[in-house]
Each structure stands twice: as C-alpha cells, then as structure tokens.
Length: 75
Image (cartoon, rainbow, N blue to C red; front, top):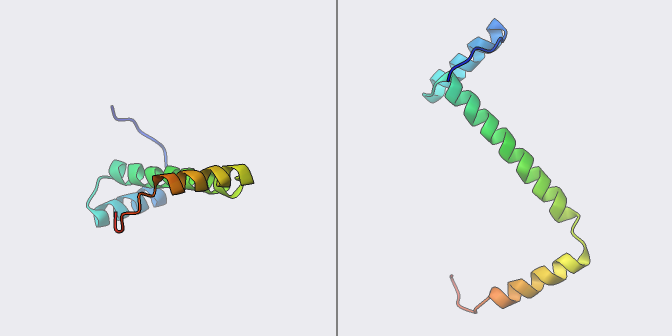
C-alpha cells in the first residue's frame, strides 16, 4: 500500500537524488536509512548494556567462554 507524506521540496529532491545515485526508489532509500538508524540504536543499546555489566556477568561469560573452547585452532 502506498501513501503520501508531506516533505519540503528540498528534502524531496535530496531523497530522489540520493535514491537515483544508489539505483533504488525513494521508498527503498528511506527504508535503508531507517533500517540503518534502527540498527545503530540496537547496537548503542547493546553497548550500554555491555558497559553496565557487573562482575557476576563477566564471571559467567568467562565460564561459558572456557566451556565452549574445544581447543581446536582456527574454528
């Protein structure tokens, strides 16, 4: 289903120009940009959670890391 959104002519022209340069439709460009934005948000959230991990998390992480290491190099 298609819908119309109101944007300035300048923004419309930027979207169309960038989409054409990438060989995608305007909708395809917007979708890619939104996907990238949402991925950045998830990665930032993950980074915050990792930085906030306490010592018990790292103890468990180390235990699993050692457990899962079967000693075979290169795999």
